[in-house]
Image 1 (cartoon, rainbow, N blue to C red):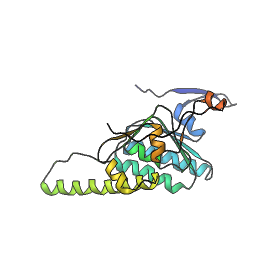
Image 2: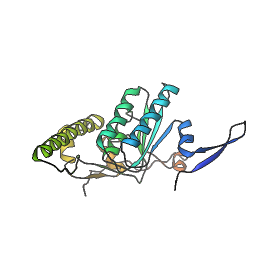
Image 3: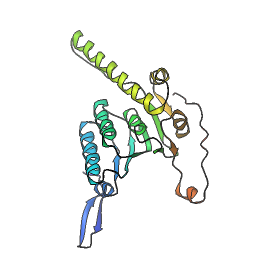
Image 4: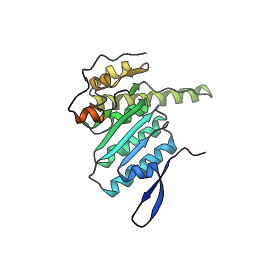
Length: 212
């Protein structure tokens, strides 16, 4: 059974039914709300390309609530984000873990956000392999290659030294929004609308990252 909500929209020529994600796309909003695999990546890439063709200069908004997923699928999204040329605002709602955290950090500098109670986590690639000793050696080499790619990208996006990123990614490295702000993973902590309207600010004094 599909859990995708549908809305009824009055177009001026009558009513039409539209799934919620298509409606959000009309406002240049893309939502990653599942684990990232090849199928999800293909959909996200297609949406990014469509919005680029529709208006090559207007910002795209990418909302992320994901526990991560396949690195190669995530890199397909990331490369497309970098290829487009227009600004991409990224928002963490809920969680941005592993590959999802890298996509969050890959947003346009100055336009990367996390909501106040979101959780973020980075770590090194992992996986299990079976087969001959030669097969296992090849897979281990590929995992190390992906580790090098993801850690180098994370260092570039956050401004952290590569050695520190490699050390932090050795184990699951969790951050709250304040810690992610200090780390350089995001640029802003999104404020509740009523606080923003009153000109109030949530405390953004960053704290040292912690691991669990």
